[in-house]
Each structure stands twice: as C-alpha cells, then as structure tokens.
Length: 208
Image 1 (cartoon, rainbow, N blue to C red):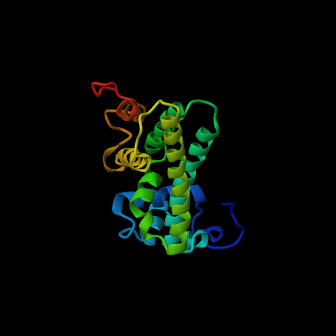
Image 2: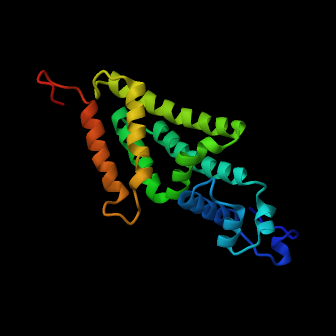
Image 3: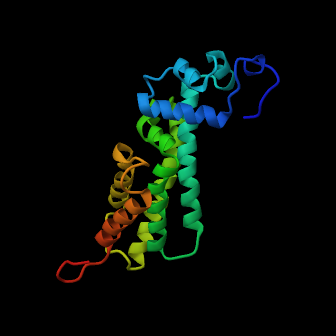
C-alpha cells in the first residue's frame, strides 16, 4: 500500500506498511485466534494507534479476507505453474505436494489462518476464496487422473485420493514448526514416499 500525505499515519500516529499489517494480523490471529484478537491488539503490536490501523483497513473481516486471499493465491499460483510445465503427471504431482508442504515453512502464519478461519468470512468473500480452492483441487484431480491413464498409478477413487493428500498436507497446521526437528523438505519426502508408493500399480501379490 502506498503512503498517503493525509490521515492518521501522516499526522504522527505511526506509519504501517500493508505487508507489515497483514503479517502482524496473521501472527496474532494464529496465536490468539481470529475471534479473540482485537484491532487494539493489532495496533499495539504494530506500535501505532487504532485509528492509524483503520486508516489502512476498514474491518477485521477485511484483514482476514486479505490474509486468506494471499494464502490461496500463493498456493494456486504455484500449482498453475506446475500444471503448465512439461513432464509426466506423476512428477507434477510430486512437485505439487512439495509446493504445498513447503508453504508451511515459507508462509506459515497466513496458511494456518486460512485453514483455521476461512469459515469466518462473509458469504461473498468466502465464496471467492472457495472458488480458488476448488480450482486448486481440480488441478490435483486432473493430474492424478492423468497418472492413472498413463499407467503410473493403479485405478483410484480420484476425488477421495485428492482429499487424502490434501488432508495429509493440511494436517501440518496442527503440529509443524519451522524450528522443529524436521525441515519441511524432509517432511515432503516422507509424504511423497507414502503417497506415490500407495498409488502405484500392485503386482499379483498386492505389492506396489
């Protein structure tokens, strides 16, 4: 957000950049919970007055919407690029999973708020976010369907497989910490081993 020459921030009540405002709000929403966090909390954390915060954002719902939009937009941007790239479907799926998992180390606060609090958005904003989420899921479905058609995966219930992968990846919101014992890249490798081996064709003895 560009700085303006008038308003609370310009009158000495403190300046705040849009990126900083969203980052602080996301951190507080994640730590205290969206409903428990007040605009006073956000202003205090930023070191500005509440009018200075309202100069840049109208409501707490607007803050939540921008955080959720940033999260799903980052996810979908990466997924679109992977989908449009050259390569076999199974390799694209591996890249999708790596992208999803490493988002928790790169943009952890906004991803966690999106997963936990998207349901608190007003209807119109919530539907926009969910339309992007459906696009994200559809790309997964298409890629897994292609992997089945190419013989890399056995016949699968594709929608249920996508839900299982999404659930596995999103579960990181409950326990992953950037300073934990295992980096996101290593977690992605473990997830990939489980998912890819679980989806590959089986021999007559039922082994992958």
